[in-house]
Length: 293
Ligand code: NAP
Image (cartoon, rainbow, N blue to C red; front, side, top):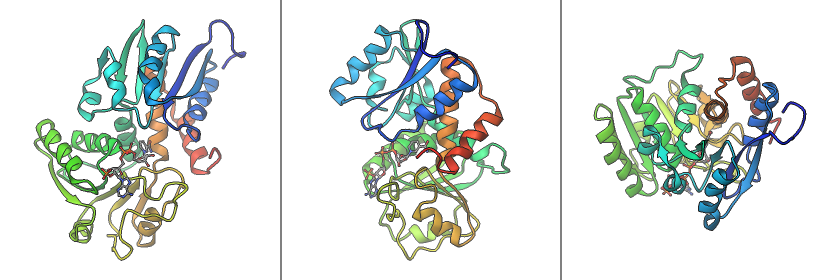
């Protein structure tokens, strides 16, 4: 922020059910400070009952926009004037833009994931295979990114098969070129499928703080060293799942870059500023060093 809050300060923020540990205020206020904007990013913790009023409040209070986090990413879509096509297909928004009292919903999780996987790397998604653990909202976003990039096959392993079945059905109609198969997380074929995959992606919260000893994989599973193991969790920075993959020499990646890239995309939607590489890298570096947990 330029000189502190005044009568013209623009407000952005995040709405969610439990945001006491959110890193979004840190990320966005760092960007606001870097670009000397007269804006401010605030946390708004709300209950489900307050959701429609809170969204209406964005209009009433002339808030520039908000991020939406768990558990309102799906429900808040109902209150939008328009939802971006990708977000509509994913079935969730994480960004609301207030454009002269018209509310637009976007999903920047999927672009954030894609950038984190591709930017500055030789990684290719087209023609590859992925094993995805989990079938929740975040899984839908990353599956969308993988299919959009032309992945050949995705094997979803989830505790609740029905949820995976819905994704399979919907995504098949959007991306008929990508084959999606579904399995129970307890299915014995997990070992075989992991042995032949290019990407192994954890989208479950298993292993996140404070239950850091949990792991979505059985203990005796052998991870193929040629794959990329990706955990959407960013705290702890190295989950039990990532440590298991690192031990066999696989490339590992946590969710910090995705978090930063989804934030910079939201920031762009609100301000029209595309943060440069240097500030983006600084934010990634700060999260990697656990400076802000
Ligand atoms: P969600 O919609 O609640 O989905 C959670 C998924 O994990 C579901 O598939 C659920 O299975 C599975 N799961 C939960 N507890 C489980 C358990 N005890 N055993 C087996 N499976 C379990 O949550 P989400 O929004 O997708 O978020 C998932 C994770 O991604 C969280 O850790 C979140 O912090 C992280 N995330 C990171 C970023 C980032 O930028 N890095 C962005 C978004 C999310 P069922 O279908 O059986 O319930």
